[in-house]
Length: 409
Image (cartoon, rainbow, N blue to C red; front, side):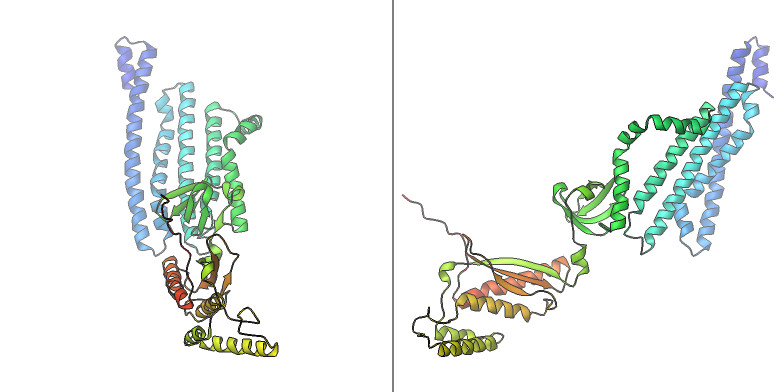
């Protein structure tokens, strides 16, 4: 059965050299045959899988093909062939027989891991298509399973190659547990963080988050065991360690997205020197504003009634009650916002005066736009402030701006 060995012995080769030459030649031939069988098996299995996938309406078989399950299954064909020819391959050498058997069995373990990985990736893809799992960190859990699987596979390979029981290696893991914890510190922290993130619903895939310490400001596109990927609004990608979401400050804008409006919180600054009382002529001009006419008339009647009741000398504006241009302007802004079609009136709508600053007196608009789309929200905000800024001069108010001082000669 080994003509090359017989030929070499006949030509005065030593038995040792003749055996090794015969073994090397047989190894090359058997590995070549196994490679040919692998190609044939892959062709048959993959084509059969594509035909079955095309004949069904389900997507799971397409996912199995996409994640190379048929290709990985075809890898078992060389294993069965090589395992069957081991007695011929080793040519009666028990030691070589045991080593070949061990190596072929380790190959089988590797193929089993690849097949399991294909199944897990298919499982992950199918889960991510489900609405209830679409925003969950499935990648983290799959990666934990794969790490555990690779760990078991390595221990099995060592057990097969050494001929010792698997329990022996598990016992050895206890002795080096400190080293394992040090090496896999980030992985363990990431796994714990993934569980807490999922359980407490802190971050989902698709959330807009901001982490100033990492320069992240955009949408979460992936949550895995070690990192969270954020696509920033300039289309750059920022990766943040998963466990940092529990130990660092993070702003999640999901609450805004799920609410009924997007906030406007912006001040404009009025020059304090332009604030004054309005005379009758100026009040008549303001009362001609359609949206503000009723408010001005009611306010005038209220003030006149108060001053009459208190017998106030109204020739001096500081006596009694009088209307100021700043107060009327603030009330006008409030009226304008309450009638604006793009402002959500069910949420807080106000224009408030803040404490004076070196830059003037702040009037802050605090309201929520009904449209939460960023571009539309900014356009609505800009239109509102365009109107407010243009309206200030009508109330005899001046906006604050820095003036360049003339150079002193």
